[in-house]
Image 1: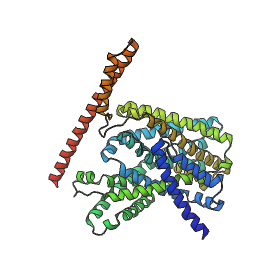
Image 2: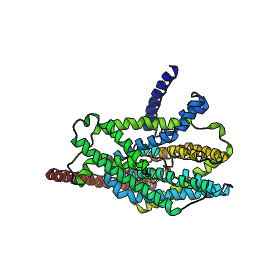
Image 3: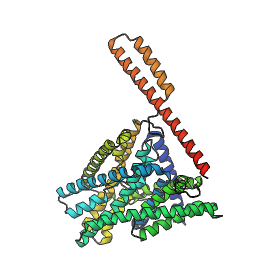
Image 4: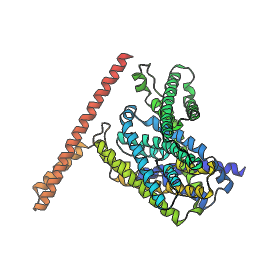
Length: 478
């Protein structure tokens, strides 16, 4: 009875800690991810509040929990994405994803090879750590001020790299175990996995929208039934040897943009009930909070050595270099997201996918020494990369510029006019050339801000006019 009550208390504490973590993030710009991981460390390996058999059970269900977390959070990520933005940014996101993944894998493999590791084991570790975690990135980009294009690219990247890491790592592990590799087969597997998942996610979403619209009684339990459909979609997609996480993302994307997509397909318009999004946000909150505490609980502090810490710091540095290069090239191609370059470069967090993949060689029967080293480094990188992401977001939020929906910088016209008047007075009353020069710069800047503000207001007015015309056109068609 005591154990049952303890689990109820634990569940309550997860929710409360998660809530205060979000409050802290809003007030200080410090992301809650590291705090939650540290809470998990305190509960597990530091104070041993959870017994060893329970921690052992937690480790055995890691693949199941990883799948559940990816499914729930990617579905929410899809609900929040704009369909038109996804279509326009998918090429850039795919290129950014592949480049970042390849750079990370190449640099990490070279580092570990130079440290005396077997080339295949070095490549195995590199592919495990090659991509960001959608469980970290998607909730984070939805809670900070960035351009819509940046949010879309980062969300797509984290979803794609989760799948990419899983497929490529398993291929490398099989090579390590059976000494056979067909590169063409790996590429075909990746492409088939993504395309089958996207098609299944789209078909399921369209049929589910029709059922929600036309079948009486379904709306009464629309959220729980939507989750049941999501679980079915995920299981079926994985059974078809495709990627269930991508299917969940596409499913959420179509449901979240139901009105636009059904109109585009010339179907009878249907729209998702807003309560589904509200309920799922709460579900995602709990899953995400438990995810980070869980990572801390299963972390093995006792096996961490100075050598492992040094390797972890070295790999983190290479990950940040790889992201900086990929972000720089992306910004070169897409000048409109230049202001978000620091955010793009700082989103380096690894998550549960890396932890699950690190334990995969054990399932395949790899040597104990290889298993232990991979798990230790992977878990340490999860902690280090989340700390780096937290610091990056904190620093970038201090320098953030707010944007309108049309992508232009948002400027308060009244504030700009007041600054201009103050600068004019300073210029007239300047007592020296230095003061006059400073006042002139302030005057020029205030005029520039005012012009930006006017452009921003005009662009928003133009957007509202276009939206109104589009709505009028749809009403006439209906």
